[in-house]
Length: 525
Image (cartoon, rainbow, N blue to C red):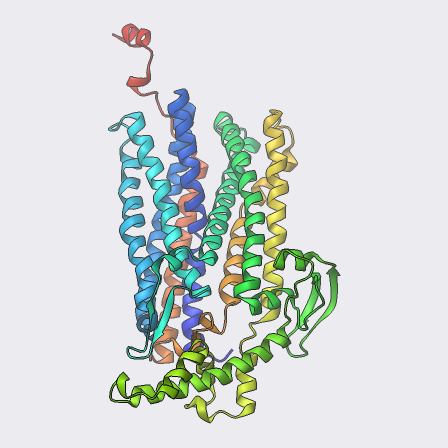
């Protein structure tokens, strides 16, 4: 990839996004686990559950602070590195982000203070309500962010206004209930729940191996295994739903994930293994499982899934339609008013306006898309194919880890039900070594979702190359170096704090006076 302004801007956002996403899954999952643990404490009055909530809450707090800091940087990048994108779709994209800040982040940030400092100042029920508010805020925050991101994947409820030269909202509820956004939300939060469950399971397993904090570790493992098993199963089910929606809204991404260069007869086979070759436009040594991809992608045995080559031919047609829309748009812009625009021009734009973004793909090769040659149209059509080997392998590693988490959680759920958590040191070591794996799966999932959308920053509407700010390449390169250095330092600090907290273990938590039995209080007097 050439180190031009587009590549550098993409690289900068990828670094900050992937780094930020190191903290998001654990925040989502731990917030729910904390609420569950404290609920058990309030219901039973057993002090061990209060101690568990405080201990895991400390780790949640460290992670939460870094997540907030890195998330704020990302939002500034939209205006700094992607100014034309912000201008073009700000009316739509900005609304969910604003709601996220007002409704979700303020809720989460307000109650997280009550969680840490309100243990001896609030009643049991009051503090429990604050903990659940933190969990609700964390998940609502993810919802609104993914509504914005889902619109980028499937831009519904909006239309291009030729007078303002911007995308505008036509149906906010269509944006809100976008099926792609909803599927991404439930899939992402479930992945976060798995991440937190594996983290709690692995740390608790380490305590068992060291013979420390056994009561806390066993109860934590039981909660993590139960919650994690349900979450791991839901990730697979909801991932299947995402695949089904990709067949409808992002056909090229699905074909690239499968390394499917040619359209196969229905039902399509699933490529379990192979070596995609982007230059030769084939997948070497492919091992197919009959019917599976057809069932996943179409939920039927009779519907075809188009291959990459067929989708490229469709892209050529849409580029030509987009050129007609671009020509009509130029005539509209030069007209004195909409009243002076001819009916032919209006009809041409209304007929082909949905393909305007495809004409903008030609801007990489020619200033005026109307002057593009057939070779340039063909080249732009092939630009709609993302990097197939990257998507092929990241997807399969992600899916493989997903099934591993199901096996891991099932094993420890069974051991917990039999009270045998500490009898198999080898399994405990596997749990400890598994701690980083959910982050690998989550990062790869993010790569599949975002890298698979290229070359579009908004699917079918705005190419990534047309969305960047007019900055110097050296300016962006220097900020990449700066971010990398700062984030590396923050990561080292965060890991040091987390490791120190785990090594220290839970602090002794004497039972609150209000929870003591009356006889104990009398004896103390």
